Structures are given as C-alpha cells and as structure tokens.
Image 1 (cartoon, rainbow, N blue to C red):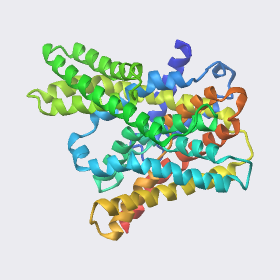
Image 2 (image 1 turned 120 degrees about the vertical axis):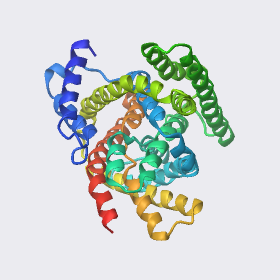
Image 3 (image 1 turned 90 degrees about the horizontal axis):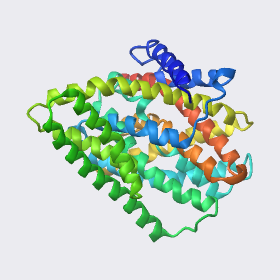
Image 4 (image 1 turned 45 degrees about the horizontal axis):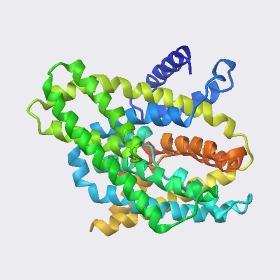
Length: 397
C-alpha cells in the first residue's frame, strides 16, 4: 500500500469518525467496513493488497497495546475469574460446539468435513470489541459488562491463534492431532508470552523514570508495544499475549507511581491519535479485502451460523456466570445476553482467514474462507448496530 493510498484512507477515516460522535447509532467500524466494500469497486483501490503479515505485524500490536494500557487493573482484578474462564476453557468449548453446529448445518448446503467445520469455528472464536466497548460504556448501567468484553477479547486473541494453528494443521493434513502435544504447545506459547510481556513491561516502566521528557516516554511505549510482540514471536511465544501483558503491566506500574497523571497524559496524547488512525486503516482494508470473498450463494448458511454461534456463546457465558457467582437468575442471563451479543468478529478473524489462505495451497479452503468472511461481515454489521438498542431494551426491563 502506497503512502498516497494510506493518506486517502486516513482522510476517509476522519470523515467517518465525524459522522456519529457518540458512536451509538452507527458504530464507526461498521461504517468503515461498508465504505471499504464500496471502495473495492473503484480502480484506484484495486492495487491494495491486504496480507496477514500487514494485519498481524503492523495493526494488531498497536491496537492491543492501547486496549491493554487503557484497561483498568482494578477491573481486571474484579473480573479476573470470568475473563480467564471465557478466554480459555470457554473459548475451547465454544470452538467445539460451534464446530459441531457448523458441521451439522453446513451439511445441508455443501460437503464439509468435521475438521473444516472446526477451522471455521476457530476463525470465528476471537472477538473484537472495537465496535462496541464505547457503546456499552455509555448505554449499559452495568460497567462491568464493557470490562468483561474488553478483557476477554484481549486474552482470547492469543489463545485462539494457538487453537486455530492446531485445527488448521489437522484440516490441511499437515499434522496429526495429539492431545498432550496440543496442550503442551498451548501452555508454552501462552505462558511464555505472558511471562515475557510482564517482564518487558516492568523493565520499560522503570526506564520511563529515567527521563521526564514526554517525547522519550512515548518512544519507549512504541518500543514496548511492538518490541514485546516481535520478541515473543522470535521465541515462538504468543506476541499477542506478550503485548497485552506488557500493556497491563505498564498500566499497573503507573498506577503505583507518584506522577501517574504525568505519565498517562504523555502516552494518551500520542496513542489517542494512533488508535483511531489504525482503526480507520484496518477496517477500511477489511472491507476492501472482504469483497472478493462475499460473492457466493450460501448467505442463508452464513446467517444461520452467526445466530447459532451467538446462542452457543450465550449458553457458555451464562453458565460461566452461574458457576462463579450467586447472582440472581434473571440478572445473570440479561448480562450474559449482552456480553454474548457483544462478541463481534473482526480483525483477528480476518487475520486468521488470510493466514488460512496462505496455508491452503491451490485454493483448497476457498469455500471455508468465503463462508467465514460472510459471517464476519454479518457479525460486524448486525451485532454492532444491535448493541445499543439491545442494551436499552434490557435496561428498561
């Protein structure tokens, strides 16, 4: 992508962010994706090539760091149980149940293997709160809902990559399934990423105190966001979990510093500009890339899979709440419904789809990719637009 194209896309993103300042009626990511789909038909934008490396190495570290750094450590402590279960055991259970549902429903429309169905479920497992967290904070009186959605998304991005790699390998027959081997890889990649991220985050938080110059503190935060990611990946750890852990660690260290406001003001002044810029480019590119995969006949199947996956997530989230807390029955299921509907698919799902396209030689997974892209786009549009009215409806009841 050329500098001129990036500049044009940033200008379009600026205009999109000014459409709905409250981001209630038309969440900006949805607007950007739809604009991106429209742009894909213009010759000027056809030269854009969206790759999995671009999304993974350029966009995700910055966006993950911002989410983690801005995430309240108090909220993480209060909701650690539900966030931890949903992003690990809950994620695995969701993939298994959604995979079985896709295998059963998909068989009505076209020939699909169980391994292929599980790959689709793994692609749809990670959630992207960019579209809904700001809406949830404004429209829902229960502030813990936005914290759970945001916290779960940061962690399940890392776990979903590991599970996707195993399932995609089985589907493409490049590796056999071994439970102990899969669990060993999962713990190695996940624990390594977390430990490295915490260590680097702690080290950089101490380095910040060496200088009081804000520009240099911002430089360190950039090094932390992208450095932790690349360092973890070089060791075979999860770069996603490393960056998230580093951001949370930095935030925690700042909360115990004498000049917390000074440090946060310096970093926020920079990252509050970078975040919408990255989001603008990313969701416009998702729309441009998705168009070629949306020309197919099984849209009914995509709709069925979307709502079945939401229903399965609803049961798992509600069951997890019931397991952890003695909350009143009605309150549990209202909360679970809003969290389940907020589990929107986005940038991580697109990355996994692009990676699957690279892994599958000769277009072996084209049908799975088209189906998954359709569900992702439907999820972005339907769930994002529905979150505000749903939260208001549940609040009124």
